[in-house]
Image 1 (cartoon, helix red, strand yellow):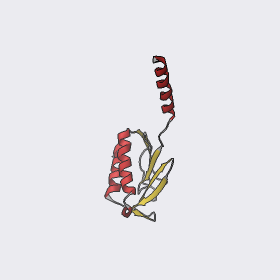
Image 2: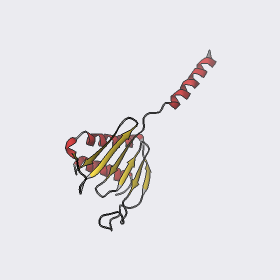
Image 3: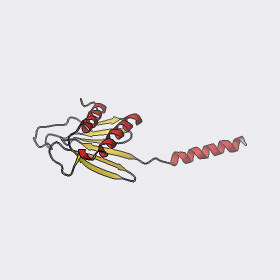
Image 4: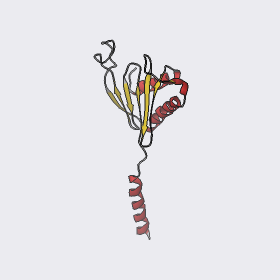
Length: 134
């Protein structure tokens, strides 16, 4: 009986390892066109270079890959979801001082263009803090 129970626990453990939760990720492009690609485990920061900037001199700094915890991803998700759920922060055209927020999962994807706001500022502050860009 003990052997049977151990065998069943082993089978359950193997089966549960094969069950994956849906991947979720976000991307955020700030008003300067610096991009943050956010997965459940890391943030990839891709800055704009002077040759890509409208002024020809602005630089967003250096590329970075930063590991994040589940709690940090959850905090980012909460801020992003609050932005997605606030329609008056959104606009239909990309203009100066706007930014872009995207979400994708195995079952859904969405993109919005954001006007300047306190919620956007909080998200940017968190992303910069996690990437040590201050």
